[in-house]
Length: 249
Image (cartoon, rainbow, N blue to C red; front, side, top):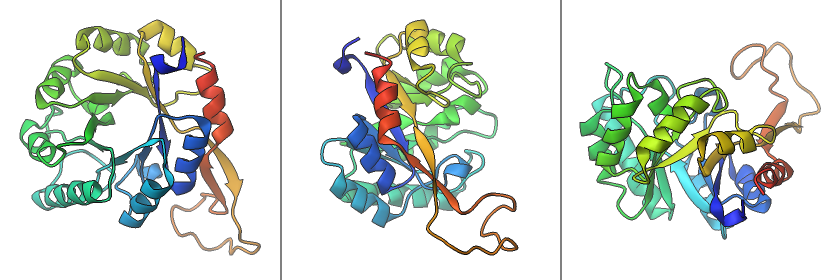
């Protein structure tokens, strides 16, 4: 393939990862906080600085008020509406969201309500799709709602494992919505996933571990879950982004 035949989205956990994604040649980033929770809405300061430093890579922002399931209370939905409005004011190019019913279907009413706030921005339905009870009618509902793309691993732990469903969904989409293959996509499998599914948009993080700046740490104290090494951070590597893209060329 040639470079303009596919799109690369990097899941960025901060401004530093946004810059690395841009340097590595990504077409866009999905900016998230709360990566251990599956991604939550980043701070407005994070969005504003990311918008300033991303000069040629598009900026999409996840709108997810918390981790856990995808059934939201009225107050959570109200916050999501406000977050979308503020994200637009900050100049983002796209919004990433997704709401389900308790029965595991696409929540048509809530998603439609949120989509009313996204006019002028690209829209992605995130991996809440992989928690849907029945993916085929869910895809048709996302098309009806007007989403531009859906991020999915084919309802499996990784996109590589989800190739059969990804292939079927890509055929079903028939150009009406874009399939964005994500979760576990890396240098070693991106080409095989592309060849097996004919999908042309990919989502990955390309992170590496880097040591923190603390010279002293108290082993008795954790800011989060006990046992996690809080003296190590993970950020996107521009070299890993470049190397992953290179596998498609």
